[in-house]
Length: 543
Image 1 (cartoon, rainbow, N blue to C red):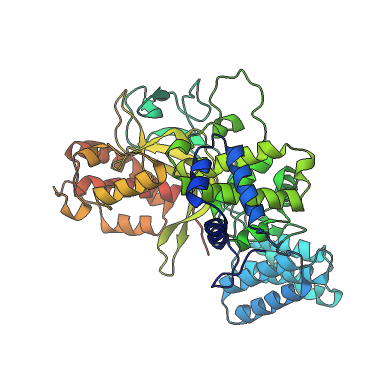
Image 2 (image 1 turned 90 degrees about the horizontal axis):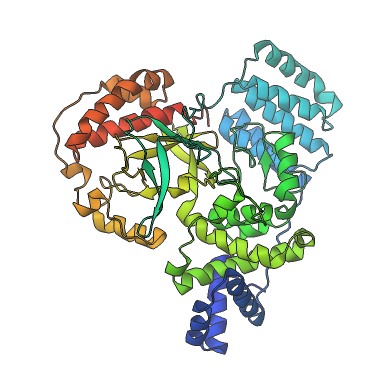
């Protein structure tokens, strides 16, 4: 059995510690480490760790995850307390948990839907309120309470308005690239030994231009209790639960049914255990991909596609650059997941076990270097919008962009779709550079290089690093532009009209300022331009 930790938790970290203790007592650790490091395939690595886990007699106890009316009732009662105090966010959270835990055919599910509809009514989410009322009536809602629910239904119908999309219309690529499904013809993919695959401009590109619009092949919502669909990532305040587990919620029956048929029927029984073991999002993401894609398939199509697994499979893994402890930790996670899938699902009645091990460990390596955040602006207590990660996505094309500490492109989230725009003028033949989270104005050179080497295994040679550009506070300022305070305030408050109105002019000014960089003026204006496009993307009106 997995031993209890000091925190009384059995998790991946403690399992690794237990495994190392076993090896230090019973084996020559140095010799085993050397043997593991000499392995050439992901299958060999997972099999190697499997044998060690068996010899250490480490087993994982499945965490029971079943619907429970008693728990559902407690959550609903807590929701009632919050509702009486007018704490609508907290009430919504408890009612949603009650929906999640209520047994499928019990009145508790109807009661949870009905109570959540009251919060939605208060928040003027009348369309969603009506859906929850309908669900309550379809799930054994008590007869003696229906009259009150009918009144709410009538009031909602009288005041219901069309639901608004949480983002503006998704930009489109105006001149499609014949070789890249999601990209404009203004860019192309090249490959060189020192750079790997990378993206270059095929003509001069202006600030603000759309270079690519890409949908992810697979997504993973990062929070367990979320107001986003676990399948399509759409913002939704009246999610419905998986009929069997308490780990996944969906915006509609169609998303729920699709997810179950594609992959959730396999992960459903083990997700609670994986989260109990504190598996991070990248390991859960690797599982989700591996449950859906087990075959590269035959193709003669030379188009680089965003909707095909082959492109995701062939993303860089950095295997040869990873340390033995890094690969061992990932192989251990893969072995534990494999055992749970084998023991508690029927997945391998249809799919090859060895292929699953290979792909699972593969994507535990591709994920950290390639997958991207999907973000949403969320209002804080002062009404200022701040970005929050809502999901991760596997984007085949966007993963080809190299890093720069002074990037010339940036990604913006529209639903689960990412839009790539130029945030500098880019000359024909110049490489398009994204930023992996380490900007020269915010982090000094040594720190940036350390982080980039640690996660991405390269030594950055961008302009900012080569010329050792200073941090923002030490940059020169030319006072070359003035932005009214009201524009700052409106953009930080999520005002789309302001963003649309000023974006074009600010992009032109940014292009003119480019010759002065590095300077405060360019950095400040670039952030404002980025904020304009962020505001047009995902934005939550309420909690």
